[in-house]
Image 1 (tube, rainbow, N blue to C red):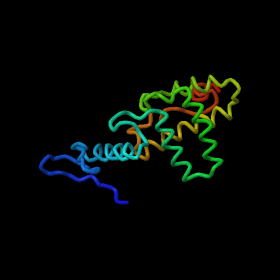
Image 2 (tube, helix red, strand yellow):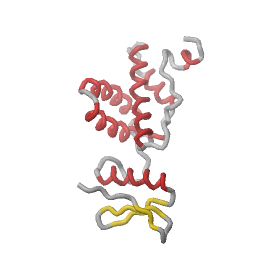
Image 3 (cartoon, rainbow, N blue to C red):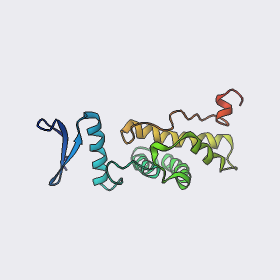
Image 4 (spheres, one colour):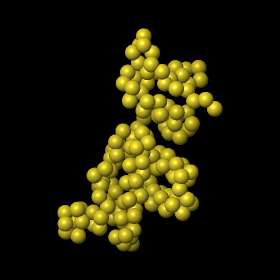
Length: 161
């Protein structure tokens, strides 16, 4: 299967891609054009919502789990899936780029039976997905970059844990 590639139209000084019989303007900036191109392809494959519409946490998790199912063994995939489903139950509909570290803290605090090791693993799982999404180009930035994953989060960071 041949994938359409973005092309630069000199007369318009902009990037375009042709999908089927329709040409889509991707903008004048090359980096932004290729980001929009990836969004369009994901939308065409039915993996995301409307192009230009921000990805939700659930959509980012789905993209990651699809990738994980192909690149990790089943136990690793299941490990991620368990934590991500729990987080998604609480914050799945939220725009991914509007996620804040306090959302993770609230989620962790809602699981009173989790010990420090489980809390750490849960935090790592969620943060890993957003690192992956930024690296792969699904997100322009990682909204959880500043999130730490030590015992008691802030207490550990401030040297009180």
